[in-house]
Structure formats: structure tokens, C-alpha cells
Image 1 (tube, rainbow, N blue to C red):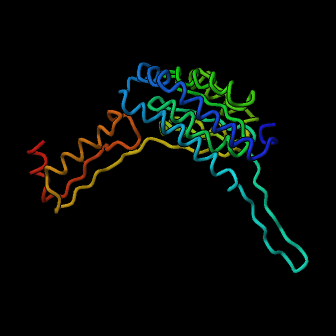
Image 2 (cartoon, rainbow, N blue to C red):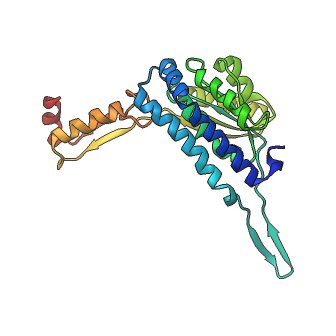
Image 3 (cartoon, rainbow, N blue to C red):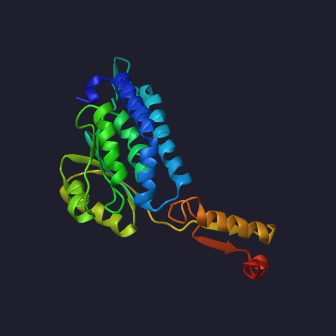
Length: 247
């Protein structure tokens, strides 16, 4: 039914969802700060980024296009893009409200319904989002399922009706999701897993600049709990001693 209302109606509904999120931005901000342990400034950015993501994909509505391919002089082949149906997103602990909104907007705009499984350690903002979704979106379009990975995440991954899964988290859990998805059906799985982000300092850089950049990268607004944070510092041997001494 959500796909059936058409592109323009879905775009307008998503924009309404974004407007209502902004109306409760202060409440979302307070809950997110208390629940995740993050500070106010970056979490305010998360709420804004979430709504920006919703509006961005609503604006791309008419870019959902297929292709027409000449086959023979008398025939054409054409492709049509269709939604998966039900898309699951398993959200990490550090940016729940942003990942539950900006990272689900594309799937919603394409005509899918979404099931968000927020982290069991910081799920309160997702519950507020579910209240907002009830006002802005048709029933069943944006859904929240709380619980642990074993109790809620695994059944969601294994469910035959969930054809598309997106996960942000550890390598071990990502591998487990791949196994579970493959055992239950042919599914499209996207994994954003833990990595090592190096800051590489070449010999022509002033050691003081290297130190400032390294500290800023490790903090990266979220006190080291973000996938964009610097986790390794690789120094050219010619400046190694100077940087280490200055630290």
C-alpha cells in the first residue's frame, strides 16, 4: 500500500515526518544525550542530519528510474525498479536517532516499509520516532522492534519476509548476520563494520600540527565512539621522535 500511493505522496509524507521530528527536536536531543552518554552539540547535529537525510531522499523521488534497452529493430527491453518490500535496519549504540532516520529514508522513499531494531543500550529515541511516525506516516511503514540481538535482531534477520538487511556494528556480528540471512533465504545484506582509521603523517608536516589533528580525530565530536574517529597514528620515521616527545 505504501508503494501504491506513488512517488509524490511518499515524498510529501516523508517531508511531514521530518517536520514533526524537528518539532520534537529538543525532546529527542535530551533523550539521546541521557541515553547514549553523548554530549549535546554532536547529538543536536544528529537530529539535524537525520531530518536532512529524510528531505534529501524525498527530493530524489523522481530519480527512481529504470532503463530502456534496444533489443532488435522491432523490440525494446525495459527495466523497472521495485521495492524489496520489508527492509530491516539494525542500529548501533552511538547515533541511534540519526541512523534510524537518515539511514532509512532511502528505503522508505523507494516504497519499502522499514523495521528498525535500535540498540538495547540506547533505544529511547527510537520509541519517540515511532510516536512521530504514527502521526506522519501510514500504519506499518516505519516500525520499531526493541530487544537484544538474540531476542530481536536474529529473528528479524532470519524472517523470510525481510528481503533487505542493513547493519552497523562489529565484524563478528556482521558475519553472524550473513550466516543467518543465507540460511533462511536469498537476501541483500549491507554491513558497515568496525575498522581502523589511520591518520598518516608525512615528513613535511609540523609535529605540532600532527598532534592537533590526531587529538581532533580521536575526539571527532563523539569522544572516539564514531566510525570516522582516528584509531591509528602512522608517523614517518623522520618525525616519529619529535611527535612522540611532544605528546
